[in-house]
Image 1 (cartoon, rainbow, N blue to C red):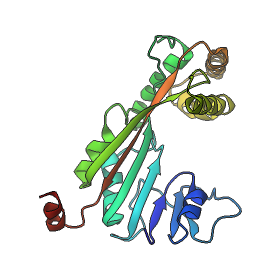
Image 2 (image 1 turned 30 degrees about the vertical axis):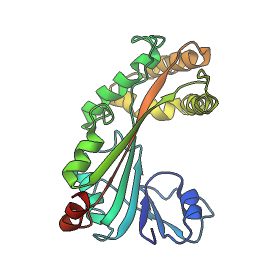
Image 3 (image 1 turned 45 degrees about the vertical axis):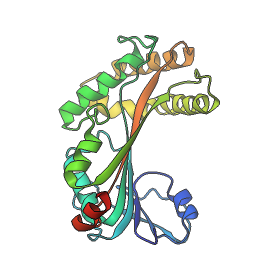
Image 4 (image 1 turned 180 degrees about the vertical axis):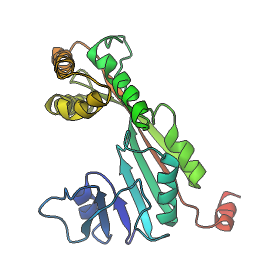
Length: 243
């Protein structure tokens, strides 16, 4: 990992600090970088849904996260990642489900939390962007089609609220609830307008959602999945390694 690293969402500075010999490039649609960054970190405005500006076979590691709902062609996205990865380089794709559920039926289907996933899935269909990346196994399928090998995945539940007994999961759930409560409008407004909701309908839904989360009566969670794979060094080398 000497140079050529792309990280799409957050954690740019931490990654650059951890690997001071690496050249780390953070990309986004907007110039949202912090005022101070490590010397080995730079930011570029890049639209990952178009042809990437990075040269072929130039990147050791690509990390992309939470692109669900913004990608219409996942195959094209992973093909671009494959093109830009060096032979032997890695792609890591981190995505989330939009469905909030529970294992003990404490999240009712007709509740605000129970309707959260349906809300985004229906809106995504109107926009032509799927919100069921995790459920449909799109990451692994499309990475395989792009040519990545040695693909592995990690699927886990992320709690909503501080209900878990495990201290790490409890803290994770509290942060999740805080984020949803603090920026509910940011999550909801665009999709609500896409679905033709009125202003009153939006405010009523938001109020119900916040009330349910603050009540703390549900064991709510949503799933996240991390999938990673390697670009073959060469067909001959990989065949010899697997023999």
